[in-house]
Amino acid sequence: MSTRTCKISLKGSALLNDPQWNKGSAFTDEERRMFNLRGRLPCRVNTLEEQIERAYAQLNQRESAIRKNSFLESLKTQNWVLYFALLQKYLKELMPIVYTPTEAEAIANYSHLFRRSEGLYLSFPNADTMEEDFLDQIRGRNIDLVVVSDAEAILGIGDQGCGGIGISTAKAVIYTLVGGVDPARSLPVALDVGTDNEQLLNDPLYIGWRNKRIRGREYDEFVDKFVQLVRKYLPDGILHFEDFGVTNAQRLLDLYRDEYSVFNDDVQGTGAVTLAALMSAVGITKTKLSDQTIVVYGAGSAGLGIARQVRDAMVILDGLDKEEATKRFHLVDKDGLVTVSIVSQTNHAGWAEFQRSDEEGQNGASLLDVVKHSKATVLIGTSTHAGGFTEEVVREMAKNNKHPIILPLSNPSRLVEAEPKDIIKWSDGRALIATGSPFDACDLPNGGKAIIAECNNALIYPGIGMGSILSRSKKVSDGMLIAATRKLAELSPALKSQQGASGNKGEIKDAEGDLPPLLPDFADAPDTNFEVAVAVAQCAIDEGLARIDFPVEELRAKAQEAHWRPVYPLYEFDPKGYGEP
Ligand SMILES: NC(=O)c1ccc[n+]([C@@H]2O[C@H](COP(=O)([O-])OP(=O)(O)OC[C@H]3O[C@@H](n4cnc5c(N)ncnc54)[C@H](O)[C@@H]3O)[C@@H](O)[C@H]2O)c1
Ligand SMILES: O=C(O)C[C@H](O)C(=O)O
Ligand SMILES: [Mn+2]
Image (cartoon, rainbow, N blue to C red):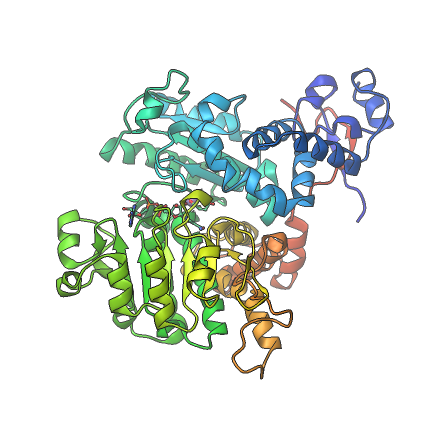
């Protein structure tokens, strides 16, 4: 590939201090002369590869994951190309450092680790100047993607106030690393509407708005003001909602998704990736999605998102009647099985459609009882309850199924409902497992290893977002989500090994005796998401939602072209070039 040339207007320390354009020691002699950098740099010109190795060695001087996270955070504020090239080279090793699980710790300690600004902070006390503050950051930029969080339900660690900017930036980093979104074209946003986290409110160093969370009309108006600004100034963009609380996540999605390209990752991204894992699992157990009885433990944004997505897939893909499909689900939350009387007591808007009769609740409504009575084939955990899948529960699943499908999806790792190695032990190595955070492969009782798929929405949302951006879709439709899911399931190693192993009499291990993962490996996430993006864009085109200005046949080529890669362009000076203040 030939090296791109860019026209740049910045010079001297302004250029060295701009992470988008800085190359550090990799500026060529010619560039050093042209941009007044000669005396500002040591004389040796490094290649990007040399810079990566130096940065990697510096990173490894830090022992704890959180210190590595801070180091990388600093690197990102210095040099984007180097930061992303380093992450790309050591993707599997470094993703857990910049994303789940370490990012949870960074967010929880945000006010103490804070060094410099990293996005757009829209705080309730400054509501009056929101438009000005918004324009100030987008002026002169071509933003395609806005990632926003109000931080009420960060991963499984709850309300994190203004530290929530950390989830917006981490999700934006993954959009670039895995989805190929140009980092200059994404905007991470924190909506600081206060916090109910007492620890933060009592922390003298808390850096956000020290106030209880605003709710009700004031909250809705604040959020609406923001969404209308995005619509007005970025009419072709996509707005990604992350880690909003359960009372707002689905509600805001329903409110805006017909008007704009809006996506809720916890509801839809999680629904899509989990559906892909299940499609892969039923492919290897040679059953159908609609044959499954599914228990969802923790019926919040993610649990309900999964239930709805999988239910709808039973209807669309297997032709089941919607009512029948809904009956395949049992939701279990803090107070046990979600029944008619629990719904009427809690007034939980999202639960009613899945409520079970009170008689079923009477038999005993604990997770163990529900698994026992329903003869569940699939158990999904989105509860934040560490250890919630006890030995008894897993053994019950294993008693009723040759291959129980068990997905403990709560993040970060310490909140997982059961460790994969325990599930393997308690199910005699028969369970098909996927987790929300990364876990090591486990030894199987009779030899071989079970490779544990990471069922994290990061395996699919970057492709969904990139597909929407590529097609400039007016909306993120259900069809686009199904197209993404189908593509992801199709690329699953477990399914592929099944197709290769026809005739091996129900054996689900691969030729090496290993149990392949239910989803593609994260090391392949960029390729996987590229395919997802093309499938999503194609679907937007087919559904008439796209606003493309190129012939459909060029879609793949356009997707390649739009895919941002961490390489240094060559610079030419131009006073009207990039980097103008
Ligand atoms: N793997 C993924 O891609 C992925 C995606 C989204 C969320 N998650 C994880 O799922 C978890 C939930 O996230 P969310 O956004 O849905 O949060 P949420 O707050 O909306 O939902 C959590 C639900 O679990 C329930 N719950 C809490 N304790 C429980 C217990 N002991 N037993 C049963 N239910 C209990 C809560 O009442 C609530 O309904 C988090 O840990 C999050 O990290 C994973
Ligand atoms: O952030 C993640 O790792 C996945 C998911 O969005 C979550 O909230 O846990
Ligand atoms: Mn999330």
